[in-house]
Image (cartoon, rainbow, N blue to C red):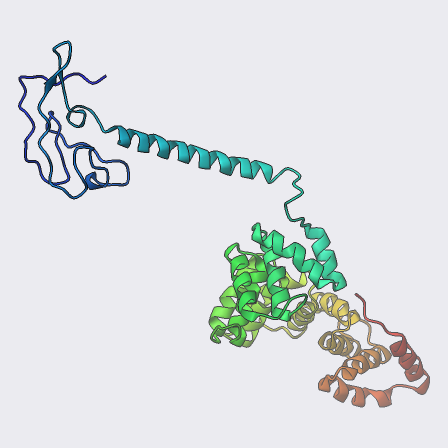
Length: 356
């Protein structure tokens, strides 16, 4: 209980400023949290009316003067408001905690979603099922699911095509540094699509972010930008570094370019042995540039034993894919090949199937 005011102390100013009644102590009564004095008027006055003088003291039956509630202690309504606010906060925090806990428990009303099932459905072409799973997972914050949702919207698979929605989901995933999404944003900048202005320099930055995240296409396109000087100055050393990172992940084009770099000594000392390793792998997988370079190795006897029949085989495979240099070399060496060797070489070409 608050102490009764000392009768010898100075009484409150009978005319305080509007909206700030003063108790006997001379200190203004604090309003309720988040409000002002005029929002919680005392029972003795109406909102907006001028302040009233405290009522005169009346003696109780025992002779003890009764003091005004407003002048002697905080307003009860302010206490109730504060207590209600604290209780509300506690309840909200408790509800959030329970919600997080329940999220880990089986819930028949919670939408079912499984990432592996979604990927499997996507691979099999069941895009509606894939979208049903991915959308739930994306809304729960799964960055890879966000990429799939964006991809499905962008290509109109299992849902109506919507580029704006696709861009929105790609950006959400990119905000989490999802490497595939970072590449997509770079691709938009590279081509001036998706509502972005064409900017090859900005595209390169996104490709490098994607590549640093381990995405092979980000690495490959960063390498191509440096090799061709698109969006940056030409830098074959940086190109080779990015090609190497992509080739180490088995990227076919990167293997072919890297073999070409070492075979012809582009920005590095010629290394036929290293070149042969990359070129043979890429040629067997069906890359025309690698096939043409491997044919040159057999024609010239670089690292490998000179073999015109082998050169003929690889030139012919490359020429069949439109490589003009290979076609010119094929026309040059074909007369050097005997009829029997040519027949065997053609039979080998007919059986050739690219390695996976």
